[in-house]
Amino acid sequence: MRSPELGDMPADEFRRYGYQIVDTIADYFENIYTRPVLSQAEPDWLRSNLPSEPPQQGEEFGGVLADVDRLIMPAVTHWNHPSFHGLFSTSTSSVGVFGEMFAAAFDMKAMLWRTAPASTELEDVVLDWLRQMMGLPEYFEGIIYDTASVSTMHAIAAARERANVRVRDEGLSGRPDVPLMRVYCSEHVHSSIDKACITLGLGIRSVRKIECNDRFEMRPEMLAEAIEDDISAGYLPICVIPTVGTTSTSSVDPVDAVADIAEKYGLWLHVDTAYAGSTAILPEFRHYFKGWERADSIVVNPHKWLFTPFDLSVLYCRELDELKRAFSLVAEYLKTTDEAGVKNGMDYGIQLGRRFRALKLWFVIRYFGVEGLQARLREHCRLARLFGAWVDESEQWELLAPVPFALVCFRARPGGLPETAVNELNERIMNEINASGDAYLSHTKLSGRYTIRLSVGSIRVELRHLEKVWRHLNESLNRRSYE
Ligand SMILES: *Cc1c(COP(=O)(O)O)cnc(C)c1O
Image 1 (cartoon, rainbow, N blue to C red):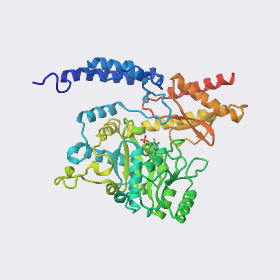
Image 2: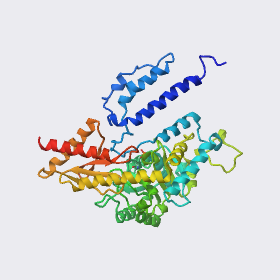
Image 3: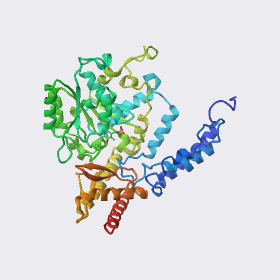
Image 4: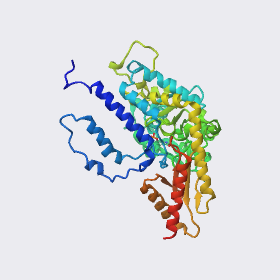
């Protein structure tokens, strides 16, 4: 008999609350459109409503659940809301939630194959499915990390290892024999590249940002020039990172031309397609990725635009063993003599234990099928282009960047208003919509212009949601014109 003071929650209690939670989440998804997209809570509201000390005695779980509704929910920004158009619109599917439930229940830590055979092998299988879906050649093998930031950091670590300066063993500090290493990317690259270089001891100084054309795409001739420049200065180029789908505008660097240059100088080619990579499952979008089959590594985030709950980022490598060379380190208590030839997740990165993330992606791919996923992405891209056409055809608005995927960059530009007042006008329009809770938009600055970004990517988004935000934008603009 279990002592009532010890052990876990009794099974009947788990069942009761478990059913209640599934009901709550189902209602949440069903009625999410009634909630404000951005949390309307003020800073510190939640903190000031919570006891500052932990309970000494366990509490009735029903009361804890009631607090989720009363205290947590008001401080939630609803990424699953169909009118979440800010940053990149990302959302989970319901089956993705099931994946997280099982992963938490099994609570496996995939270090060695034997500590998590299902996780280790399912990861290989599901990443090979995704590879086929995206039309990548068979020599690419994937590994799952939490985020693209971490995937990219591992790629640059492998590039640094390949550069043959023995950083793994000797480090970088106290070494006058190591030249300044260089990592190249466009000026529109994601900040995760800079952060990876900070973490890896290369420093921000090692990141060289290459000029873009007026479509915000890296100019390969400027890249070649920069590399020549650096070589004659005695620096050591190690890696070049083109982006397919940049964060500001979703622009596409010319991967094939960049690959020619990487090849010429023997640099590691890492393709950052954390956001747009999902569209490679659509044959009619493959042209954006031309040349990525020549990469050493590619990062794509199913947690961004493949309806898989955060977090799940995939790093595909041409030679997964190069990652292993950079990171494998086997402590005595982890040495195994049996199971020769099995893959041990811990060999491919800085983490020892790894979450069972493959399960939720497996659920998503099986539930929707390749065709179901393709249909959803196609619809998002269609809706974004439609919105782009509304902007383009309007006298009062203008597009500020091409729309290759499902992100629209635009601004209000009413006739008669001096250019100096346009930035403030757009900032006020966006802030007004965000404060209303009806939709969430975010912004960027392009050549000094305040640019509103509208991303379409929620599994729950429909035409009417875009019509709603378009109506709001116009109402807000017209109100301002009368001021
Ligand atoms: C979102 C994004 C990232 C960062 O993704 P995380 O998974 O949050 O680290 C990196 N690069 C690009 C191009 C992105 O769109």
